[in-house]
Image (cartoon, rainbow, N blue to C red; front, side, top):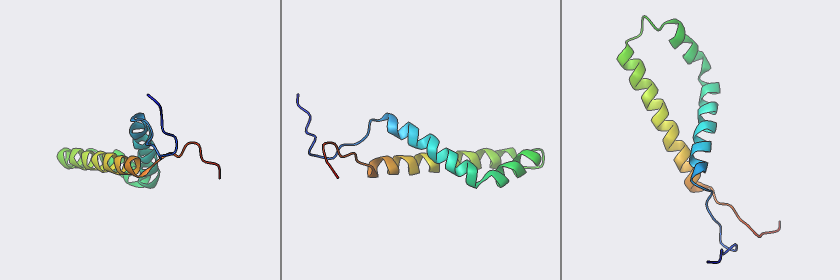
Length: 80
């Protein structure tokens, strides 16, 4: 089986996981004040809302990472 390097190719599937953690890092940097408030007011916050909020954030990060993965191609054999 011969690889066709003239066509753009996707990264490996592990790229989704790498992009997930990179996007998670970006969200954590952007939302650190909210995270600090959640930590200090943990006893006052409804635990169900906190859990649902965190789940929604992780799902949205996963969707964004997957869309980034679908949009990214690698070009091999090209000279720029």
